[in-house]
Length: 116
Image (tube, rainbow, N blue to C red):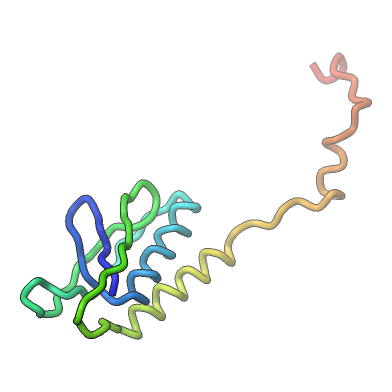
């Protein structure tokens, strides 16, 4: 189990869920984007609740491993949804320019007087 710590509170959830949330938040931050994720968490009284967390760009969040006697909280649909969003965002990242694409920018024989 892991505890997701935010400025709004701490939420005990499954390890795979917490890892997926932090992974999704990281790729969103790289894209300067945000989203809201809805995840299950284990309340102090042992009941399972849900929380909607804002993740991504400028969202403070950490996941801390928690030892305990609780059964691991698993929600396969949530994990798979977050992993697919991570994959989609990572695939959208642009490719680096090939040398042929930017060769004209490297020429040193530019006559700046003509340009200016």
